Length: 197
Ligand code: ADX
Image (cartoon, rainbow, N blue to C red):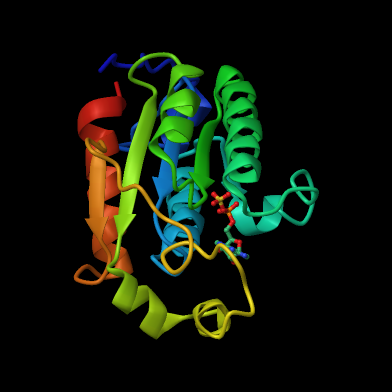
C-alpha cells in the first residue's frame, strides 16, 4: 500500500502533533447488513479523523436515499445504480484529498469491486462490518427486520434479498463481539500502520 507524504505548515504541525496526516484521499468503504453498525462506526470515525485535522466526509446509505438516490429502490438493478453513484461520488471526494467514509449495505461483490476500480490502487479500504443476521435482527434499530418478516418490506437484505460477504476485506470488524471503541481502534490502527505516511 502506498504511503502518503505529510507536508505540514507550522500551525498545522502544532495542532496535529503526534497525529498522522494523510494528504491524499482515501475511501473507507463500510459494508454489512442493516443494523451491523456501519453508520455508528462511520460517524465516530469521522470525529476521530477530524480531530487528526483530516478533511472527512461521510456518505451514508440512509441519507443518500433521501436525496441523490431517492429515485432508487432495492432491486438488484437499483442497488447496483446506488453503489455506482456512491462510488463515483467517493472518487470525486478522494480526488480533492478528502477521506471519504462510505456506509452502505452494498450487498453485491461485483458492485463493490466496480467501486474499488474507480479509486487509485491501495486507496480503497474495504471494511466488512460483520454481525450475524440473528444479532442484527435482534437489534433491529429501525424495526425493519420485523416488517420484513411480516412481509411488509420486500427484498430486504438478509431476509428476502441476499448479501455477499467480502472475500478479502482489508479490515473485518466482528461487531457482535467488539465494542464500538474497539472497532474504531482496529480501523485507526490499520490507518496508522498502512495508510499514514
Ligand atoms: S444498498 O443495498 O443499496 O447498499 P443502502 O445502504 O443504500 O442499501 O440503504 C440501506 C438502508 O435502507 C437500510 O439501512 C434500511 O434503513 C433501508 N432499507 C429500506 N428498505 C430496505 C431493503 N429492502 N433492504 C435493505 N435496506 C432497506
